[in-house]
Length: 116
Length: 114
Image 1 (tube, chains in turn green, brown):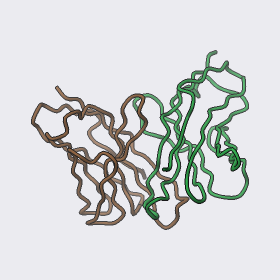
Image 2: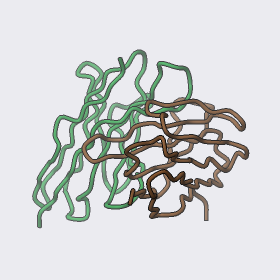
Image 3: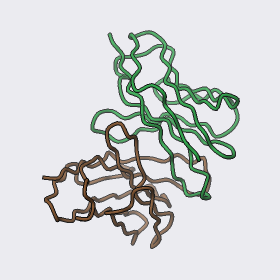
């Protein structure tokens, strides 16, 4: 079965420090991986995605993610965290079990708390 | 202004009542989706539609219904058969020509049972 796991419910970092939000996946075939951010009472905003090519993907707001096929991981990173980065982060993988329906399978989400 | 518009932002449902959440997109996307978000459970797919006049059940379709009469519109009806409808509902859309296409989301609608 296809799945996405975000092993940490919450990540706490100090402003200015690097941050990592972890994601592992299990899919059949080539993975199409996405990261989204959600601020309170808002919809999901797209940050970045991995389709093919370079394992390091750069996205919005200074975020990047590293695709690691051998570890089936797609961790989200940022070199220097901002207080305004505090939000809920979702990792997702395209569901490839039923053709090109566009469905996403989401992780449970990780709350990022950046303290000043 | 392009995007996905959900309305209303807040909706209250009485017991035994059906309510409809609106989702409109002007991105010319082929596919549209409805997700339900509960705390600690991530997002779960309710229904999706890849083309006008066609839609499929997602993982938690019981107690919900949809229609896709126009490409731009994908309204979700929460029926009285849905026993625990209080949640945040998110509409999304994308193109279907490639698996790598990004799925974009609306701002969400809160539904509360009173």
